[in-house]
Length: 311
Image 1 (cartoon, one colour):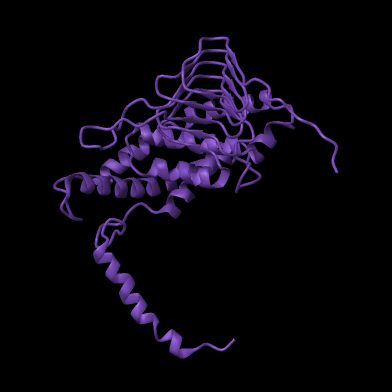
Image 2 (image 1 turned 180 degrees about the vertical axis):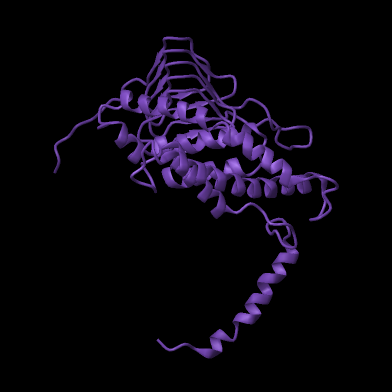
């Protein structure tokens, strides 16, 4: 199809109209400022972190105890540098956002040094994160009769993918790193359909079966050995507002699940005061907004089904 030159001549005018909106609407651009953390760089960091957490399963094959130290050391060195840069960017941006300064007006703050310190603190958590993930992998195998082995879970299970990224993001969240933890978990959300806020507290041996549509809110507390099925929502019942009508933040808004709880598909549990007691089972499609004691089974009464002969 031939290009109509007359139509293409309209593009400069369109460009001008788009740029005019940058002056009109200043809340959704980041022009004339220091660089923000890069989504692509953060995702590459996450991929290399998974290479360390699950060596031999991803990019590099033929690893053994004779060469794995060099391989991991090379990754750690690279991660240190890249994390330092991305953390420094997000710490600088957060400082400017809070204090209303422009790029270069951050007083005596050395964001590169702060970024390096947090990068080291984060990397030091990796042995602990691996131990937690080993328990999560075993919980998936113990909880799913369809699992063909631990390798299958590591290769294939979206629940483990989401939990892996969450556990990394949660460590950064604990270090009070802005932006990047949420960037990580939303990247995992886009890949798996599982939405876990990095602020949630989740104990070991955690298993999400199937997973699509699971939502775990910021202030959830989940004890060890909990199992969720697809479509489960652990959400807020309502949002408190201050006298000026603004949302009140940093309050407990999401449920607490004690040890050994199982929640079946499409159940919804809401509210910061809602506690599901240990060893309890929440049936499929239940909507729960109040606490239940330990060893409780909550189900919906069976609906009345009607059968007729097909015409």
